[in-house]
Image (cartoon, rainbow, N blue to C red; front, side, top):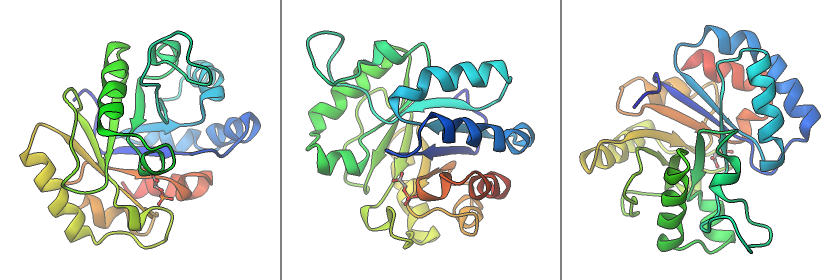
Length: 219
Ligand code: PGA
């Protein structure tokens, strides 16, 4: 792993236009400067290029991630975004989020193809699993444990259970393991304090820059 830990990932899902993302980056500037871990922000595809220009011009330490990549390469795949089309703008991609597994019926084979395509474009997958039983494709280094009951519900997993799952995942390979699901500034430290969990993946509480700044400060 090249990233300094903890890793704090913001998953904006299908939220924000360019203007609000631009302001968010401005608002987070001083907090991110002082942080010794790694911040990865995952906006929607249309904003990756402009966000990467902004990060470079302001010399921010923030890294960018996509929220998905196609399981196909470039070609006749209407509506898809191939990993090779975004590799200039982002070094990470969330793959296997439960919202995609459920709403887009992504299979284990789809996910392993996506991981392969990302790796071929030097994009590091942040591979989401919903429990200990999920398969983790070859090549994955960063795994996010995100139990479905905890996502967007305000009902996080217990730190003890999340740590136990992280331990099982780590026993199966050399993984950096994140926890995601109703992470807030108040509970962030409870997940990170044992050192078994290497970071957090944040949805709802990442949208507001001051909420997210508090999560960074608590990490
Ligand atoms: P949440 O989402 O923080 O809103 O629960 C987490 C995620 O889906 O990555």
